[in-house]
Image (cartoon, rainbow, N blue to C red):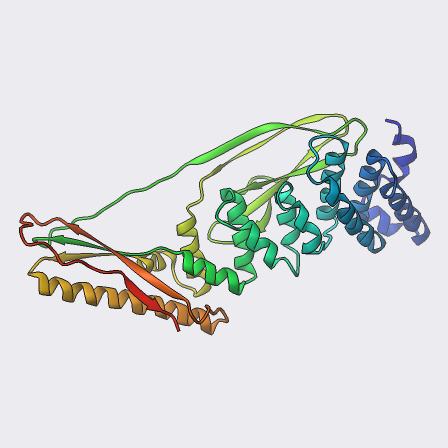
Length: 352
């Protein structure tokens, strides 16, 4: 490799640097900066590579400035510009660099995973995470962004999460008290694989993947009802590596309920029963049916209000005009249905 002889003195560990005289460390920092400012993408990538391992304060702003400049090449396909950006993100993550959310915003679409990892340590990333956690994104991205918002106790995220929960009450009407139930389930998963490679002469660069389960070498990105991890896949100089992972589908509704349960220290099964309730009614006439429905809906409403009140006591509030709705479903299992059951209207819950 053309640059290798000149760069050999720069290959070191952070521990070794701390033991060297300050003047040597300064020389290494200066050399990393010189490479970072080179007009050649391969040199700049090596500069980022060393800057990411030096943890030098003097290199933080130059790295952030490189992000600002690289916004113009954020959509470039595989090639030297793309490889430099991969090296730049790797350097920022390895050095625990705090990159302003506004600087990362242009990269949210095509560099979402490393952006999420950097936003995990950001002090101003709420707006970005709210965008990245929208319904349209893939499951793991959605889960990662929402877990981070959960960890920071975002007010806007809390209101959006509460408002997005579908609240139901299912009434099963029958002639006797025999047991009955309704069950169901869903599941799924995904897998992906490919090849990771960098242009000739580029430094070792790590690519990043999200995971929904811990593996050897995984790093916790964000805790939640379902934790999210990431792993580094290092692409060595002038070599290729296989990349890819598998994961399971995320039940977003169950996860939202899990967030709300955790915020008020409620068992998840209890919160699930609060938002998705089932009531069996033995039919003794329409008047008794309506009384039982009203009692059940009122109890459910009170439980939801209690949850919202507890969240408010812990600093999480909804907008004054916010309201929730319980959507009832009536399943008629009577043997004799000659007398139709009364209609059950949705129940509005005004929170303020």
